[in-house]
Length: 441
Image (cartoon, rainbow, N blue to C red):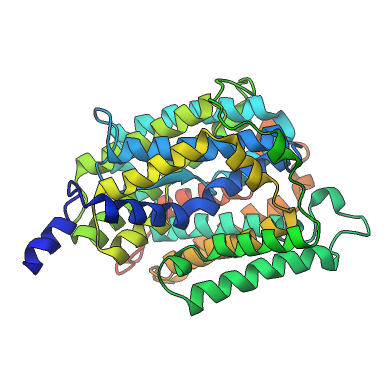
């Protein structure tokens, strides 16, 4: 009997009772909820939309709605689109270092033009994804992930200290801001390491709720936007217009390549952790198609690029349940939230310092994830050189953008993003430099 049950749990087509499927689906949502809406807030702030503004609410709403829609593409599928696996999709952190300079320099229309073109290319990668997997071994992917985290950590510190609008003013870095951020950090750590089950899984979300409540108690929360928000709304196509900007298209398309390879890794993580097997080519291709198609639909309606969420891959191994219908329940919950602007309005009422406490943890964990990937690398002279040159040039140009002031504006935006030069140099040097015979990366 036990063996039969184990076989059922490892079957993606197994349909558990709703009494199990719904709570497990909500658990998947709790694991990714904060990471899913945080990029929307960061891009809204980069675009000059204030906390609680209608535009921020809309972007948060779209992050939930299209995370749910993209997840359904993976679990239910549409033709060749989707892996028929329990893969949770959500808004990707990886694109933020590229999207921020695009939004600040070229505007929202250019951002969504780049997302749409990049997503089309991302979808087409499904036809040849297997041929380019070798371009991104742990050395390259680890470097890229570490760079994403390092590029974003200053954003978390700025938020925790009161936000960019206060930077350079007496109120920036005040105790009233840092105290709320510390509440989030301390509660999150307590839940993560001194609790179990859903409380541990949703540690950052619980920390944000605690910081939110502390903000209410100190008068830092303004619910005016919640009162103005509607109870139901549908997405608007091309809400922010569309503009085809070269820097946006090139930057986002290159990041789509990285995202596609990351999804291949997540597919392998799901099948190995949940069913103890390697993924099939059909599953890898379907997952890549869904990744790109989900981002394309999202971009048309003012949502940000989607990708598979690695934290949910771990949940599949932890629960031992491979059923795609569990994740489908979570996707339906996200869809419902996405149609209710009141939900986005409540999130956008959160003080920026509370968000800062949460993203300090999340961005730090991104760096940790990259370091974990790099632990698989054999650190010979070749691989150390790839890391050294990539990080030194990529992060150095980001810190001193004036060093490229004579370049055309498009190229300057790409070269000072931090992430793109690191990824480009790491990929090229990894392909060109000769490997030692016993190297494993």
